[in-house]
Length: 172
Image (tube, rainbow, N blue to C red; front, side, top):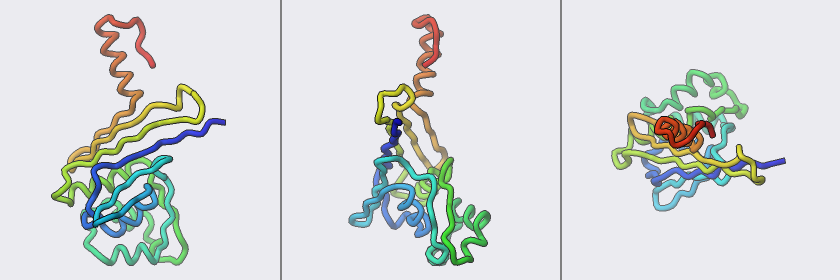
């Protein structure tokens, strides 16, 4: 059986003061983090984690500390998990899809000292399998999240080369 890995790095480092407490709580579960001298560095050896578990008491405390009008995470938590937040049992939060990039974009939108973040992912595999290698690059600005995988980039290259007559077929 092959094991698939997605080492991930978020750059540049982020001032802790730019991260809402609820965002810090969730990002610390999605990524590994190092906090030093008031800055947070997010990364993961195995990839961003899709599922996080939140303690409702800690969530309530984090939500009570600051204004959260600029956080899509808070909006989603209040809309989709209102009962769980008021309860006593830990609850699951699915961070897959666009949620963690949205959290990072909300930080960029609020932090004047950051005009962008990049997320770089390497797709690796414990066996030499064609579907186990590649990567993804993401550029997050206040306005847009741009993302492209190595496979979509190669598809674009094939289409360009096919149009120029450099190759006879265009699929990776």
